[in-house]
Image (cartoon, rainbow, N blue to C red; front, side, top):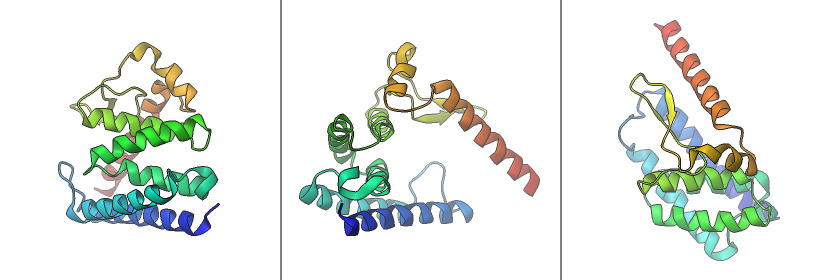
Length: 181
């Protein structure tokens, strides 16, 4: 395992999540646009991930451990300014999943995100929008009758369980806002 590379990826992920939380806490996180500081960080991280992939291939568990592999996925997931790169990462993740060298859920989330950005239906039901009342609802799903079978193959819970989890999170968020008022 390459500990230095793992540490670098985890640091990048930590900074991503720290900035996201900071922008959320200060109310600077816009709901309809891409915050310039967040965009700049995502582009910087994606650029570095491209360099890493060019030298080492996909940062899988055998190369950077579970947390490093998760960090690489998050960086790819947030590379929204470069959907072509995101698509390349999907292909790399497919191979890593086939080798059982990354968690399957990483492929599901990234593949669905790429499909949604391309205007296609998602395959695993990982990407959610909000309905007119602000409640989470999945974006359209290809062959929705068998989505739970696909989710289970990659280690995900059922779509219904995931939607309930997200609905509960939204209930708590609303309760916290009401409490603070």
